[in-house]
Image (tube, rainbow, N blue to C red; front, side, top):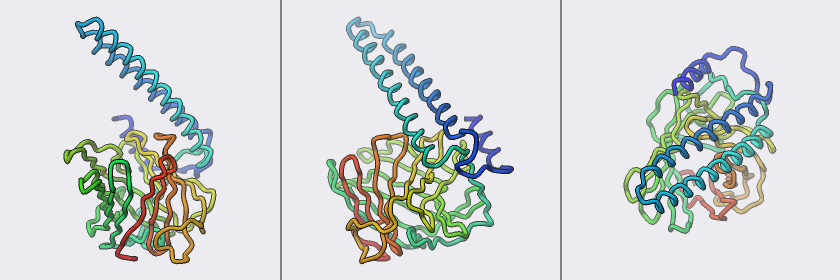
Length: 306
């Protein structure tokens, strides 16, 4: 943790930063280091599990425990290999250069006017999705509250989700727009609930802490075929990637009304099998998401801009 903090501090004062896609295989080397870290964690968990098994007085229970611990280790090591392969795919898309975006507060503006993310204060969107657990409803609101991250004034977005009326997630996102019109993602606090109780803060991160860096929420002028990082927090397991697929998608989505629809593929190397297609309507923003593994579809049902 201290090492990550030191590296993050160095990253706040970069010299000549290499452009994305340049550099001596830094992306691949990063993936290699993360593979080693993943294997070490799997082996540490195995040793802890073995220690637990040693303290079972019932021999049959101890043997069952040992076998289960070995299986968990094997699965974890296989998962590490899957992560590496997925990160290699990411490197092919984003390039081999180091990921070190230069953030100059003077290059950012106070309002978000991007047509794919019209996050003006007071705006809201409501979404619905039918899942195996029940009807999921999501409400996204742009709050008036602002704060600074890396010296940049960021807009606060609140995102809450319910399944059959029971709160399962309450997330705060921080975004800011640069002078070119690109919207940057500076972090989130993600609170996850189970049975009405706080279960975890998994996925939470903030640019400038523990080596985390901002990524693009959405660009002003997306280019078909480009990849970009949306989240980059290696110490907090946030590595979301976006691929731009189409600027005039033909799928039927809510509130398009003949407008050209942006279509993306969103994925993370931390869940190699999970991919989503997202759709954005100019002037309204995010309107639909299709889970390519389950087929579940989230759709906008109402909004202040609709």
